[in-house]
Length: 319
Image (tube, rainbow, N blue to C red; front, side):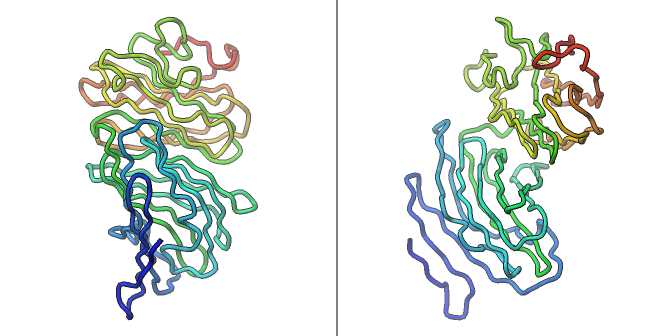
């Protein structure tokens, strides 16, 4: 690693790291103290690490240790330690933060119109965190930050995801504390929830990469993780949908308190986030039906009680 100041009077330090996939540049900024900082605009244009996710499915780019000191900071006494991996579809990080107040935040902004998502970085009592964030297609900025009474400390990555199609379909489900194992479902036309017969029609935890075709692997949906605890996030990607309809459901699969979930739909490059009403175990949230030929979603926002017809998931004939 080679680090140097841009000039003697500059607070900017550049650090070059060689990786097996390329080189990225790390910038460290020192900002004046402030009681409040508007976000995420404070991060825009701040290039911290440039990473190309590459074209090899399932290959991680390890950036271990890059967050051992605050990188973008005007908040004293916040220390970030973590290890980050960039996968072909998701960004994953786990680590520890000390000196911050409450949970952190993440914000992802892409170059496409309306391509913005955000969420919480949930912390345990010891300050540990872990998260998986779905990446957009193409160039994007990902910011992670924590606050205390002095201001903000955070990390920003400039990412270029190349192994994708910007006009595909992506679903991102997220939920908070004390609710275990919400389950995301994408059901193609003619199918039903939890149907895993020979003609598998439900992309969910029981089959996270069903063979739908007919356009090869790009026509098959992929669920990246089955999150079984609280404070979770699950994603389904479909790079080349067929000109048919798809239904989107969320099951409250395990145990926990009543909670509202958040579901972000990226439909052909346009992103919108929906929030459920509060629901409880063995209930199912029906967001609505996507018509890919029209690039529209008919939002239903219905809550369905499946408690009397449940065996390792809802067995009702849905849709």
